[in-house]
Amino acid sequence: MAAPKPRLNVIFIGHIDHGKSTTVGRLMYDTKNLSEQDYRKLQAIAEEKGKSTFAFAYLMDITKEERDRGITIDVNYKKLDTDKFSFTIIDAPGHQDYVKNMITGTAQSDAAVLVIAAKDGIMAQTKEHAYLAQVMGIKQVVVAINKMDEINYSEEGFKKLKADVATLFKGKFKDDQYVVIPISAWNGENIVKPSPKMPWYKGPCLIEAMNNFKAAEVLTDKPLRLPIQDVYSIKGVGMVPVGRVETGILRPNDKIIIMPEEIVTQVKSIEEHHEPLPEALPGDNIGFNIKNVEKGAIKRGSVVGHETNPPTVAEEFTAQIVVLNHPTAITAGYTPVFHIHTAQMSCTIVELIKKVAPTVEEAPKFLKTGDAAVVRIKPTQPLVCETFKEFPQLGRFAIRDMGKTVAAGVIQDIKKRVK
Image (cartoon, helix red, strand yellow):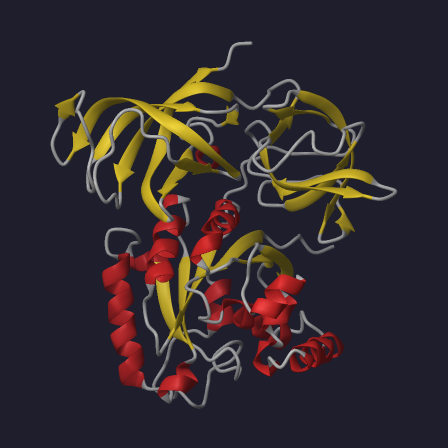
């Protein structure tokens, strides 16, 4: 029996209407992960709504509101198999109102495809998504310059955008952490084979670039940590939380504890992409059925661990933050929204302990854009988090306010909640 292929979670990000969902749909179709019959059904729905060019996008945009408005609202997941990887493709919303959902998807990803429309170039959400991908720990990116047909497959236009990407990525991603490729998703150019319309381009097509990603490190030797992304109540089955295993191993019949609710229960069964699993390893996006837990008892942002090693609930924590983009100044008492793994919660910066860059200053009165500092933070409600050193996936965060990402940081130390 062949060894199982490594699993990799890849999120498609970028500005609204730059073709993320269409790129995913085309990729699924050209790799035979979307059947001709299913594509014809999507085509019929798109034509019925007067949006014929949205057929591929409808594979990922599945709700009525998404299809009526022609935008992605929440993150959606699909399995894509290649000869090298078993990918979980995550399609993220590009609209600024739904950045919080994009962050949840990015927190569960190993790599990203940043889609940029050739005519529009780098836009506001392109910049913010690139920032957030780096903040949430992404170190492998394919930049897909899409809609090349709209600039007549121009080599000059592509080169200009490639230079713009290099400027955007400076200080965020090293040169060997990303590749820039030209595509036309709707027309199927440079998706799974070289495009005759771009003979000047000698690099990989999209699927080759994705196959060049490095496999994620599988952290099975650490305790179980599984942040919950959603919870479903399925008739005849019961409660089914879904999420990605970050560390450790989960098996059917395991006794688990869900924090911060302190709910102890047992795992009945585990599935990934509707297939039963004998065990779930780091990187697996799973749904798991649990015993005797009422609807509404747990939610997005709760974290699963084994009863013998429960996830940490913070009374407060110390972190090093970098102020990326704040219009005025950050002072003690500031209470923005923190995005940490799948949790989104208001937290108060209660103390500015020390500024560490660009100058060193003990107990500064305020922080402004470009400053890095050690601060003390108090969540407004029970929050599960871990130190960045122990569990990087649960120890990094983005701070958002006024519809923008204003800062980012990593947790250095935690004062545990005492009951």
